[in-house]
Image 1 (cartoon, rainbow, N blue to C red):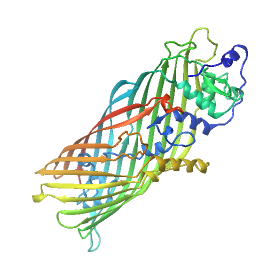
Image 2: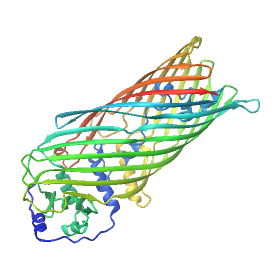
Image 3: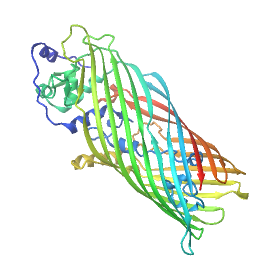
Image 4: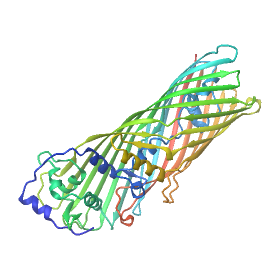
Length: 525
C-alpha cells in the first residue's frame, strides 16, 4: 500500500460537500459486480467491468436432476423411456408409456466446503431441501396403423440448486481491499470534485462505488491518482459468501410411438431463474493509524425467464438394443439484476469527522440477455438377459464457447463479452452411464456422471466433476417409490478482490463436497 496525503480528511474538517446526482446506472453495476468475482476471471479476461460470461456459465451447469430413478442411474436416459424425466431429457421416451402417471420428487442436499486462503483453512457445512420434479404424463392409444401410442407430459424440474456458502480468512501482508478501491478510482480518472458531486451528504448514499470509497475515507487523491488512507500491515481479512436460489424449467412435451420401433418427441421448455449472492468482506488493522477496520457488503439479486426447444428420437435396433439422440436449443433468457453495496467503517478516535459510519450506493436495475449453450446427447441402452434389468451409456456435447451475453443498448460491450467467452471457455463432452437391476418388484440402480472442466484459464485447477450415484426402487401395478443418493467433490476458486499485479492479491481454493438424497413417489392411472 502507498502512503496517502490526507487532503480529503482535512477537507471534511473545514468544508461541506455539494451533491449533484447524475444517472450512472451502468457504471454502478459494472463497478460493484467486480467484487463478486468467482473463478478469478477478471484477472484473465479483458472485458469492460464484470465478465458476464461467468453468469451464463453458472446458469448453464446442470448435474443430476429429475426423478430419483434418473438420478440413481446417473442421468443416462437419452436412450431409455418410460420415466418422468423424459419430458426434459428426451421427449421421445414418453412414447414408451402404456399408462398415465403422476409423480413428484423431493431432494435433500448437503454441502461441505473447505477453503484455503493465505495459508489458512476454514470449513462450513449446510443443507437444504426442495422440489426435484413434479410430472403428469397422459398416455393414449395411437391413430392409424403405424402410430401405436402417444403421450403428453407436463413437468417441472429443478435443474440447478445454487445454495452454497463458504468462508475465507487469513493475514495479508501484501494488500488490502483498499488497494482495489484505489486502483479502480485511478483507472476511472475523475477528480475529487466529481466524487463529491456523486454523494448526498443528507442521506449518505453515493451514486458510484468510487464515490462510496472516497466518502468513507478509504482512498484519497495523490499525485494524479488515488491511494489508500490506511497503509499499515498486516491486514486481517475474513469473509463469507452465501448463495441461494434455483434454476427451474417447466416442460410441455409430446412423444409418439411408430410401429414399436421408432419413437420421436418434442418439448417446449420455459425456464425461471432466481439467484441471490451476498458477499461479506471484513478487514482489521492491528497496527492501524487511521482505521481499526472496515466491512463491505455486496448483495446481488438476479431473476429471469427463458425458453428453449428439445427434439429427440429413440430407435429400437433389436429387442435388446436402443439408440437415442436429442438436441436442446440454446436457452434465450432475459435477466434483471439488482445490486446493493455498502461499506461500514471503524476509524480511530480523533482521526477524522464523518456523519456516516455506513455509506451505501444507490440500488438500481440492469437488464440484459444471456444465451445458454447448445446441448446434444447420443446414447445407447441394452436390455439385460432374462429381463433382469438394463444398462445405458451416453455422451453429451455442451457448446460453452457459443454462449452469448447481450445488452441491446451496447453492441460494442456485447461483442467484447462474446470474445471473452470464446477465450475463457471451451466446448466439452460429458459422459453418463447407468444400470438398473430388477428382482420381482424391487429395483437396484447405480450411475456415473462425468462433467468435464469447461474453463480454459491455464490455472492448473481441475474443475471437472465426477458424480457417483445409487438408488433403490419399488414398482407395483398402481404405485411406485424410488430413492437415490448422489455424491461428488469438485474444486473452485474465489478472489475477494483483484489487482493489476497478480502477486499482490490472494485467491481462496475451495473444495466442495455435495451430497443429494432424492425421493420419488408416483401412481399410475
